[in-house]
Amino acid sequence: MAGLIFFRTNDLEMIRNFYIDRIGMELWYDQGQCIILKHENFLLGFCQGEKEEVDPCITFFYESQPKVDEAYTRLKDISTTEPVLNPKFNIYHFWGKDPEGRTLEFQYFLDKSLKI
Image (cartoon, rainbow, N blue to C red; front, side):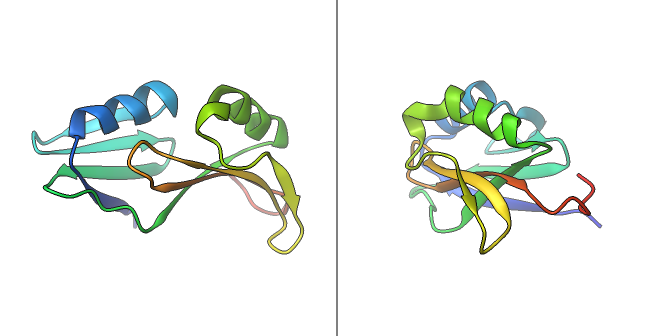
């Protein structure tokens, strides 16, 4: 089974460029008014609408702590925190925002039993 998350956006082209150029996703499928982007096994869709939808959190996870640090260096201008160890959830992560205010999380699972 697979799945993806869809959001409404009021500026599809800006969001397409942000997630492809800044986050490093690739265009997986273009439906005209909707696009589906891919990052490894993660699919994320955006559809043109009158008002953006910003409530959920979008989490990107990496295979190592240094990869999170690389993402932070590249995305420092959109980050809202610095990378930190989070013992409650056994992760290393930082937070950011996309151009429409959606919460983004960039993390590494410290649990070595997880196969990513």
